Image 1 (tube, helix red, strand yellow):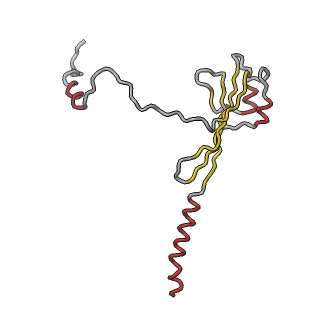
Image 2 (image 1 turned 90 degrees about the vertical axis):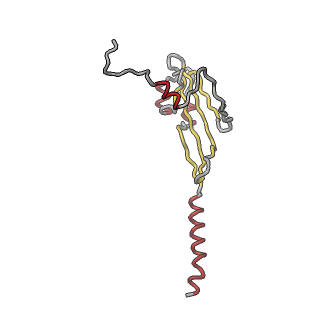
Image 3 (image 1 turned 180 degrees about the vertical axis):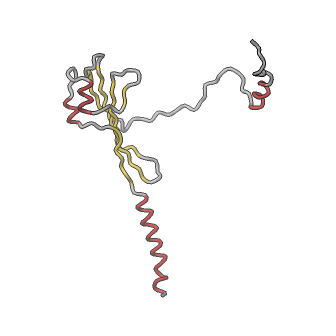
Amino acid sequence: MQFRTKYIPLLIAGSISVAITTGCEETVDVRGNAPDPKLVAELKPGVHKQRDVQRRLGAPSTVATFDNEVWYYISGRVKSVSFFKPELLERKVLTIRFDKKGVVQKIQEIDATKQKEIELVERETPTKGKELTFIQQIIGNIGKFGDPSSDDR
């Protein structure tokens, strides 16, 4: 009887440590569209068209907003450990630029893993006018709106 109660705290502690250890296991997620490098190498500027690129590599991750002649294939690997902030392991961007006729002009691969993050500016742009409190807005609107049943035409 004493033997069993003596080891119960050890069993509980061991069970908790196993649960914590398995809960903190890291996972590596592959995200985006990473085309096969062999297929990319087969594409030749001045020869292949948009439909050839789409047939070989699939649909792009995104198309340039203002210039539809640029396609982006974006891929990356991200490591996650439980509730901690995910860590970027690798990010690659394949850029394919087309001319107005849809023929491949330029193919460029960028390693975007080590690029700097842009810091946002916290200041606000001042505007002209008054800043009114909620009460001032309500009092200011009294009498501005007429009776909807009256005919003021």
